[in-house]
Amino acid sequence: MCSLHGFPAFPPVGHISLCEVEGRVHSMHAEQADVLLFTNAVASHPRITITRDLLHSSVCREDSRRIFLPVSETLFKKLTNVWYEQGLVEALHVTAEPQDGREVPVVLQVIAAYMLRVISGMNYIRNSFHPHLRESGDKLIAAVSQTRAWPISPVRCLAWHPHCTKLAVAAWDDSVRVYSPGTSITPILKCKSQRAVSCMAWRPFSASQLAVGCEEGVFVWHVDPNSVVTRPSMSCATVLKRPHHSPVTSVTWNPQGDVLLTASAADTAMYVWDVAMEKFVTLRRVGGGGVSLVTWSPDGSKVFAATTGIIFRVWGTSQWLPERWTVVSGHVQAACWSPCGSVLLFATSEEPLIYSLTFSKVDTAFQGDNTSKTALPIVDLTEVEVNEGERVGGVVVSLMWDTRGQHLAVMFKKTDLVAIFLTELHALLQVSPCCLVQGVSGEIPNCISFQQNFGDGACLTIAWSSGRVQYFPLVHSDLKSERNIFQETAISPDCSLQNISLASTFRTM
Image (cartoon, rainbow, N blue to C red; front, side, top):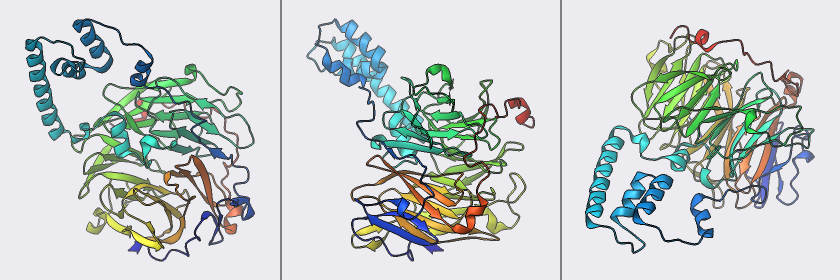
């Protein structure tokens, strides 16, 4: 089993990791650091820094009340306003325990206190059967997000387009900025109801459609690459939402780009959408809790679905039947597919291990031998010291596998280095240490993503807690002649497969 021992020499104190070229890791002092001194592979990439000054932080409703002078109001009006703005439970709290010296009839206080005890008991029973409902809203997103310190991170999500050099960056103020090389125009996707952005995914074979998951549901934005408008209006977005299906914590397109799969950690159902028709099919199974993470395999034959409990499932898309699996404790925090779709890597929220599952070529049927039906630990991520006082390892927050299947990036919950492993997939998956990426002193990595159309090897994008977005290229000269044919190709916004109906896609259900 591979471990965190055996990584190359760690960069000196005050240096940051810049790139790996022909197997050699380069670093420089933070003040003079310039990756272009070692490779031009990212010379045309946009320079991105998300600062607090750049963001348009919205004033919350509680803070906005402070600018108004208090007024006297009757008890009935007070309770009506609290009920309307904060809900029934808060109105009962105000009745049972008045804080402003207001006299409340004893009978009302007793009734309110009794109702609060009943609601508390019902919530306890509900949470016993549905553990995923113990948290809600921002707390629920933070608990399952693949972004470290999601509530305070300047960058909450990164999404590379699969076919062209285009990067979507979701910021702390819930705006989404779309960066492309060779242009000074940066479209900003933002509206009042797009709050608590947690996930994004570009539509394959379309240069213009981006799905953004948030508390309200899913916003599918149409970003015209030829437009000079920097703030598209809501007319450019399609809103997909269902009752009790919020917040949306994961979105994924199938490889053909004709259907979108959405999941919410607060909902046991997944929805498969025909975006153009705004029609959906519901996929639901009992057990495990809400579906926190979904990802489609690159070959389109399988869908991985993690829950907030110990259960996860792998669905075969030919007949939409799931294989059910369990972990020892916690829940599956991160997962990624090999480029061929035959190997699934995942990590849990409790163990410092990466597990591997190997699938046969037949949809939803695993290989016949008994050992293949067990998730095998392949990387031991037990925390180790790599330099004086510098440690790496522990529980995983995010896993990313590059599109060539040669590099695996791992981000941790409590340590501040990003680990990159070399992977070889032949008869068996082989994993070995590659390099460690260190940021500026005091920075922690918040989220990571591989550029999907990088032609010179692999390019890991890291968003740091300072708001700096770093490109870390891993360049190999023998790959330069094998550039992705989609790189820098202008893809028509209308080339998506709009003529495939959802009914035909699920004709076997």
